Image 1 (cartoon, one colour):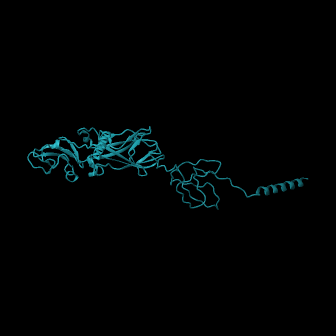
Image 2 (image 1 turned 45 degrees about the vertical axis):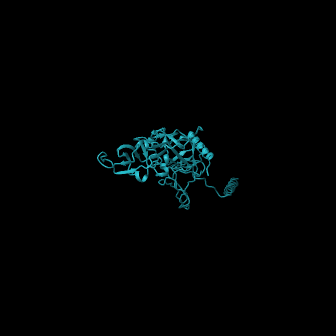
Image 3 (image 1 turned 180 degrees about the vertical axis):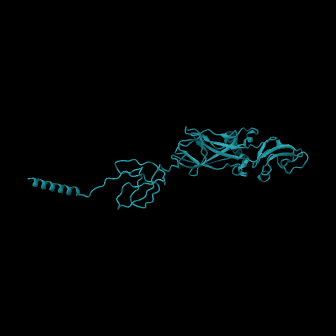
Length: 345
């Protein structure tokens, strides 16, 4: 059984939480003509409907004054009202207090989206590569801004989710200058909302290379829990690749040019030839037979020696003689000299 001391402690902790982070407080007080969103529950609509026992909705274009509502709901407890997806998802727009037919509130379908921008180079980096060391910011697009106009509220709590390559989800991000920013219940005050450059990717310990997933959520008055639809209370999930090197380069390996071939200038007739796919980078002429860079994919070899293009000559290595050949020639030359000398004498 819970005693009085336990209850007092719980209330004290709740009060401290509300002082530290007002987002823990339900933004649930609705005035006449204000906007509520599908999925919100626990709303106090007493001020919006007064003593009316019911609310009604007319289809677009219908005459409100001279007809009964196309749909009506009895309000059993105006201090705790639930905008249910089943009843309201196809009935957005104005709802009226009955029987007076005065405007009570407007119902809207929530919308939420997020974009990631690289402020180092000023580009959108959704599903793209980000060089390690760049700084990033977020753009939040939403129609939830009317929540910021409710009593005692001036902003909308939207949580930005950043998931690391190993599956960890960050609650805050650090800029390249070392400033830490919470991304839980981030204060959205405008549409669209831009954050500062709060994510610096140069911290390898915190942000290792790999693919990061990013999305945004809004759970004001339980709307995400009750209506967790992508694009509504949860944004689409986008990604970015954080690494040093552009993945399209693939390790500085030249791109093969299949249309360029090498034709031999002079080869022995008894030596077979081979075809090699050349690279687009010119091969410099040197005094030595310098090997070409090794390609990622090995060329298909059909014979033994390269064909060399007339406009792109590869150096021909100096042929070597068999050992002792120079000695034999020298011997013949010496004998010939001795014979000539003897004949002259």
